[in-house]
Length: 311
Ligand SMILES: [Zn+2]
Image (cartoon, rainbow, N blue to C red; front, side, top):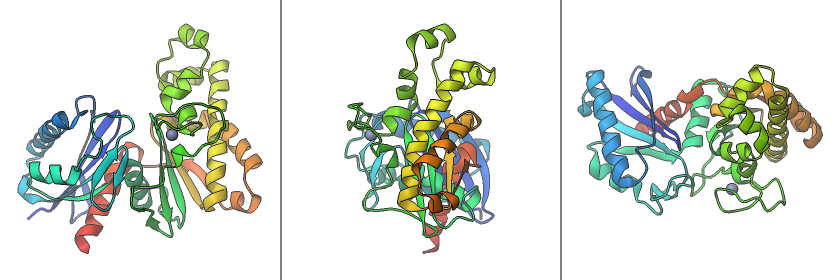
């Protein structure tokens, strides 16, 4: 009989669904959906059920084969009791008993409930670019700035999902962040925040609505767009220098949609690392793009669930 693990990477913009064969360790099905309709809990569970039913029908699979599920949520969660403290970019989930509600609605257990960036870090460690690392960080660049840490070849956790490095303050400017604190990395590099820092005249002229638009413009050789990407790289460099000085990692991988612009911000990032890190630590680390793209999270969830089943 087939044994299946369902792994769900729930983000602010997209929700990604992976269905795995637990024995062959194979990804049988992968699809990305807009998470627009999965906002409040009342809408989330019926919508998720619809997506699951559809994918199981398509692959001619049965719920009976599901050993369990892994979910990575975009926010602060409690690792011990599997509840959500809050999701910074999605309202309505404050102090929500997620595991309890999930298992009331679905006939299979929620084996893993973690933070989305942690799942992606574990995915890159098991299957991707962090495979040979002992101490590493995955930093996701998107709507928010997420981070997952591998310390001593284990995924780092505390009572909460931890590693909220995107909310390390890098400035004393009173620049308010989505977490309600000031001066966080995310308040500078989160997509909406960074777009907001571009000159109005510029984004009106080129109709810049997303950082993808800025990426396309840079690709065409627009000088101003390249200057903006260099600014992105400089700020990211300050942040990564803090991680390097703190953790002495052997690898930092950059994931999330905005990591696609790595070629445009890399030089400025590396210049800043030269300035801001201690030399031995800098010589021991590589900074690269992550390798699994938008599948890192579902792979991480799959492996965490599988490890849990073994125990
Ligand atoms: Zn913050």
